Amino acid sequence: MAKGYHVSRRIDAPADRVWDLLTDASSYRDWNRAVLSIEGTIALGSTISLVSIVNPKRVFTLKITDVVRPNRLVWSDGMPLGLFKGERTYRLEELDGATEFSMTEQFSGLLSGPITRAIPDMTDSFNQFADSLKTAAEVHSV
Image: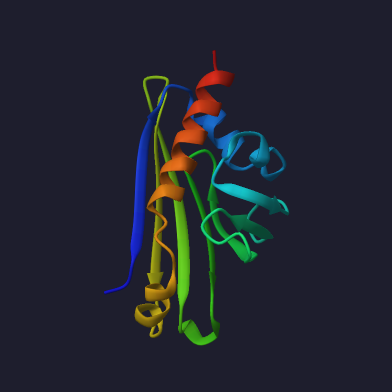
């Protein structure tokens, strides 16, 4: 069975504030402890380069495949012919001035089994990402 990861947090800030942080690549280093570097523009159809604490020696080239402001952002990376695909989905749902944030990474494709066995555990990275986003959004919304 292929790996997948999920994290969620209640963030005491409006969804627009959370969205602005999530989609501003230039500010990631200011608030996101799980990302070492990110280059590019987070916009539909664009490509970004990301280096994560999970694998600091690898640059992930990610395609932004879905953007629905301020509720959904998806980026993905993979191999040709659908042999392997990693897709990360961010969801934001505003509830009475707060935001329910979730982040899910799903792996699929014919080679997902063997490839995901070699992928380091991303649980800590996911928690750091969510905690960092929560802290940054709540600090800036006061």
